[in-house]
Image (cartoon, rainbow, N blue to C red; front, side, top):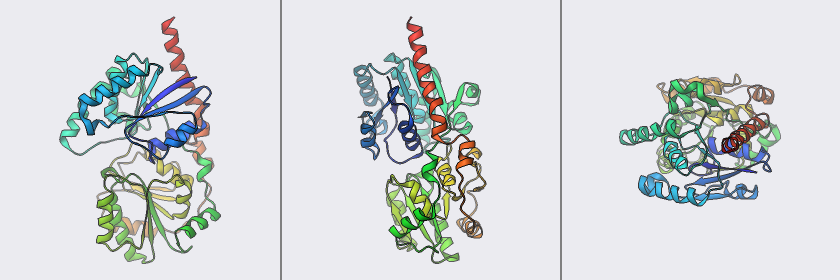
Length: 373
């Protein structure tokens, strides 16, 4: 059995985390096992342990500084010599992680880009650029969820070397049914004829929730009975709560924290609104399409390859919240259809992709053994 160490912030709801869990649940765990090195506890930790994986914790780089983080990382890797493959999902910080992994003589070091932009703070940007330079020096394999994510983290000159790995989902779980829609709406006391928009995302600067709340405020002027469901938590949670109160929307916004039934929550929505400031792909848009849900998202920000059905519309972020609301309202009526075949044809069903990824891990590992001979 090959044990692979995945490194990321924490195993909570998010595009990267959901992709890894979809992969982990379907991979042959007698051949490949996943362990996780994270900074904080997450909702998937117990499931990981049930599936045979291990979860290790070290404090985040931003909380303790590079010197202490590096020491903790070195101590961990020197203690755990069993890992021959390390797979990092921490964007530019991956450079530091793989540098230490190379020093610890881990032969396979995978960098995986899931984004297309990072923090707006100029000091943090400069520091992350320094870390980013370490990736190409220390990674043995470059992965990305889209061409945009690949260009951002590795540069366009490295594109021939990058393997694009679709952020696949367990598509069958998301197939729309009226019975699921009614049951979830009953749970939240939403009448069947009420128009519901929604969003599933970490509450952070990237996901642009304040703009979304402004859109909903404008939508209420067009449809006073409308509701909004927000799934997620994060550093901007209090700011988001304040904005909801400012617009007197407390009775109309259903706030849910991290959930493991997102596939069912999407069934209760009528429109998915995703005004991100930057995205590597936007896996939740794949999930929303699998649920037959019409989506609107940021034009020239979210990669175009996310539109694998005709349910996705791209709209400029420089348009006003009022214009976004009008666009949503004008397109609110449509028939929900089963999109499973289109998801599979686009190679976004994890059941079709898992064997290929498993082979990659095994081939990487076998090559390390050949080098020793």
